[in-house]
Length: 132
Image 1 (cartoon, rainbow, N blue to C red):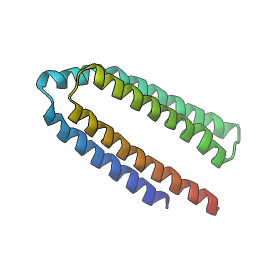
Image 2 (cartoon, helix red, strand yellow):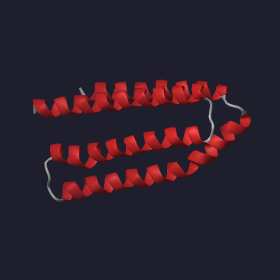
Image 3 (cartoon, rainbow, N blue to C red):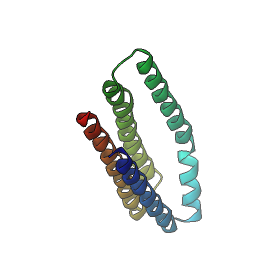
Image 4 (cartoon, rainbow, N blue to C red):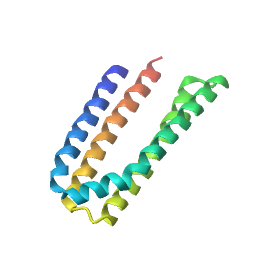
């Protein structure tokens, strides 16, 4: 089931990426530059947060926590927090930049699609845990 979850998650991410790439056609060259400039710092921050999640995971394993507890507390909860924060911050930033509503709607829908993929993966992993 975990493999099916991964396929669904990556499939949703791919479709979302295609949606966002196509929606870039709605923006002027200046708006595209604004978009890249305003989100460039976030990439470094996301990488740092993900690195922190990996460190928490390694520490949880060293403390001999059960895999289920480790999975939920160290991976799922911080990632959900990151996704919520990222979504709210991104939507606020897009509105502040004066990006057209059509692009913002597509961006929002593509992010929701990614969340569906992630939720499906997490649910299928939890189903696998329950079967053990």
